[in-house]
Length: 512
Ligand SMILES: [Zn+2]
Image 1 (cartoon, rainbow, N blue to C red):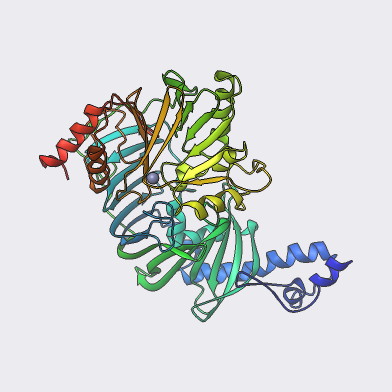
Image 2: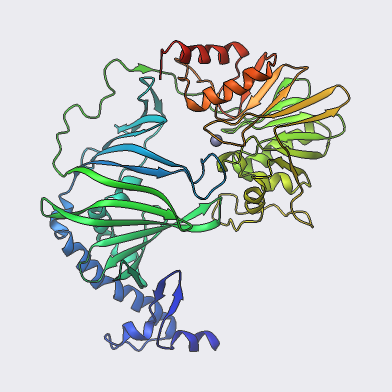
């Protein structure tokens, strides 16, 4: 058979810079002469074990690593807004001045993280099987119903000593996939099945035994299915355990984060560190998202789920606004809409902005034959999103696209859809969230719809005004619209007065 022949040919196959190790090479030292299928499996397994040994030794040995129950880590760095830039990238917007702290207590099953950036500051406490989400700006907290398993938590993989321990503890799921070259150094690449079934590729430097990189599969909206590569470098000795002073990540060849280690401590003081700070106000947990379309005004429906897309009955046809929540949610919306409007066709699918979380269901809309509506600048991005290779996304079941490809209507600063008494106005209000940012306004209903920039909180104090809100609000004021209902892709309904109050807050300097 062809396959058999190819597998037993000495040499290597190149794939994304990784050389696949051929079984015949690994078997040379083992004296193994089983069937080919067994050769492949067993040699990949056997090849991995000495690499795991070398790795675990490099980090101070299994005994030492198994006593590692608490870690404090502080990092500072830059994030690159791959999915949230002002224009479809690259180059993506850089956000400097991020500061993250992580306090992990594996023995006590506790975690505290604080994530501060130029436009947000959030905290997370996991304790007693519960998760507490902190808003460090508004000084509020909410309780989430359950807590993730800390031994599978993302924090594990950004701490190479724990990643090394994971290789050791799960050595029966580890195989040698090949080799790679990173910074001129030869690495062995181990394939690791995490406890939760996710597959990792861990690159271990042949000379030092230190982990220089790990990869995970990434369902990327920009380039389709790809891998996220995380690099560790600039190792220094911390209490006898090597720890990287730099971690950076790239997706589809573009950097997404670049952080340096400011402080790492393997015996931090845990006293009182997992309590919600004094003076923080508890807010009720957000109500579960509505599961049915809500009619905001006659023939105007707000979608359900975590992403509230908007649907407008134009009489003969329908217009949708945004495609958040992916094809699955969009299809749920469309099925309900179909019953409510007796099967009227969707003709236009307006996008408020290009950000992936609000557009990733666009293929479900275009599949109905609808024309996608956004700026000329967003055309290539949205076309790629429809055509992309996306098996990894939860929506692996891709909607079939109409022949002839994506129908696209590029609009400028404003556009009006008018049928009979129904009028739908679309305005571009550029702001720090997105350059081509559109709101949809229905003058008869005095209804304004948009995404992200002017959300209202489910409860508690108003969100502080910020650069993106200010930019949006300036543009909105110039339009002098009469607004009664404010609807957003996220959060509860509000009124025009809510927007004014938030703008006033900024003017009087009561918040940032
Ligand atoms: Zn956005």
